[in-house]
Length: 176
Image (cartoon, rainbow, N blue to C red; front, side, top):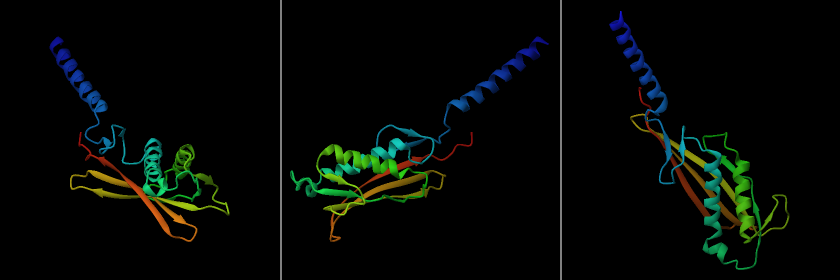
């Protein structure tokens, strides 16, 4: 009887260990940002931290461009138009992206931000978020998010364009 209980206890211990180790590890389905730091994800969707940081990166590209630098101390009136979500993720809060863009521009002191209903302004910035999704033979998923700014004069002339890519990759799901 003791031998049976001992073997049974060993089997229970082994099964428990396997189950718990399966809970602790991700089984190869972890998502990470490629070449963009060490933040980790459970899916290939953007988090609020991702898209607000993404908005700040592209806004800073715009603010440090030769065109914007040519303004000197003029501080033109700038409208940030409504953002367009052309990605496959409708749950992204575009208002958070808009707020980060506005905050970054406002804190730079480079331009005067005007409400979209303003009748007098010098430039308008149109922003679009888009994405493409690919799947590998092994089931691995790769999503590229692109955030793009285009700046126009009142006459409709495009005077600047800035963008950045954020690739998210998810490994193929493990069978165990």
